Picture 1 (cartoon, helix red, strand yellow):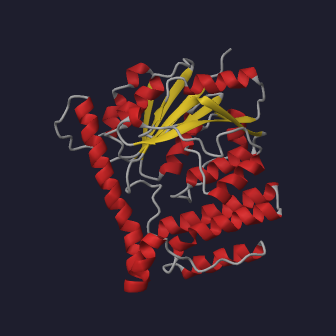
Picture 2 (cartoon, rainbow, N blue to C red):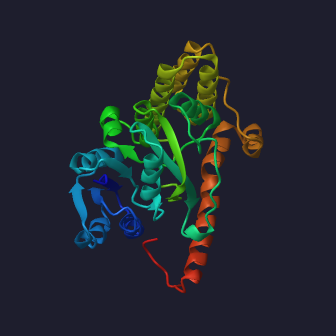
Length: 342
């Protein structure tokens, strides 16, 4: 019998995009599937939009707001699939995403292979998105995959993965302590439960740039900084459990150095702990510095002004790009009417 695939969608205030996300799940060429949506206490019309698809076999469940990791754990507790397809409520699956990955597993059987896919950023227009390969887009052993991720500041979007039930059970639940980078930490554990990554280029995922309100944005809140610190500490521990070598230390130190600036000067306690992690690998983190675009602000107006510019100027640029892409999308679809929900 063909395996059952559970498409699990956590949702929170996803009204503008969740219908398209559900359609991409329903449009999968792999027909033996179930779709479960867990709404995490949305205050908009996410639930009513999602329930319009219940006649198509979509199951919608609600819970009080407990965070994305808790919503994912709830969805997993309800599913029956042999394979798990995670899908955020504003992202899209290419029509043959699941079928392509399962076909690859049939061609080269390995029940412990972790299947990944190509992915691309988009805002409103998937037709303009360009797939750009990264060093993670290939078959890799777990240790090599993590060395590249940490050392080169790379990642794979959560929906790229197709995870077997066996791997999911071995990895355990999503860590509900994490409000930031919970997906990065979770898929590290999935990776550790696998024989390695099997990359399937024909499988495609579209990752919507939702803006700076997204949970994935690192800001100055203590909650997000503490979550990021914990995730970083766990990442390094997972990699060193596989291989504790000079190249691993080099990758981990580069990882720590890259993210150090986000903790300065607000959280000296976390900076000290990052230094201790570095020292345990024979390294020492240098005082963080700004890129040339912001360093002149530091020398002229001080650290805090440069830090604010580094945080807010990209947001302004993002807002302009988003507005432009939204306008072009409406022109392409012949709809220039304003939409207060987007």
